[in-house]
Image (cartoon, rainbow, N blue to C red; front, side, top):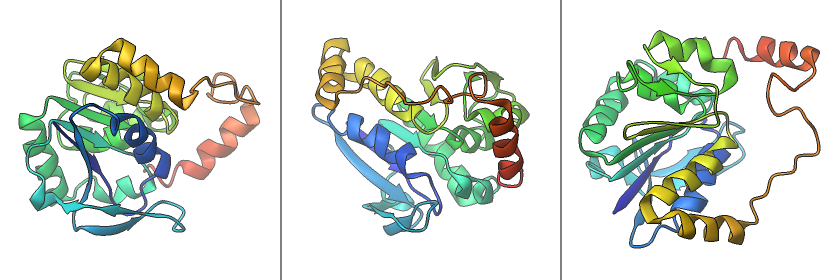
Length: 211
């Protein structure tokens, strides 16, 4: 089994690393980072880079595809080579997945039309443009498509998918080993819980990124 995690300039680190750290423990699986060109790819902070093991041309039919989000996604919404690769990869994948605004790239490739999906709360309107039905949940599964909400939800998606690939008990063991038992210090993890002025401020800061 091959698991391919897409990288592109200005992706969000946890969107890729969260699922990676879970899915890399799938028995008898090879997990690879892939980008348009092999080599280091910078995250949205510009301070961190992950290394793409292979180029898009070298990875044609992974069993599992993971597409992270990040502000760099906006520049790729009409990037033909990447969208064509997503379509070709999806044609043979067992699972096509995304984290955060990575679902917008799947949508731009025409893969989510008529499907239930989720994304970062700031990008819900964009997701609807591609004919997807937004479901306000951390992880949404529709057939072979599994989408995760914002950033940290990628860990939840990774565990959910690992349960499908290797069984619930194995996934629980990995969760236990990671001591993944979230108890955040603030009740501000969603727009329904956070103070309204913080929601408004973040929405204002982000409206140019997602447009």
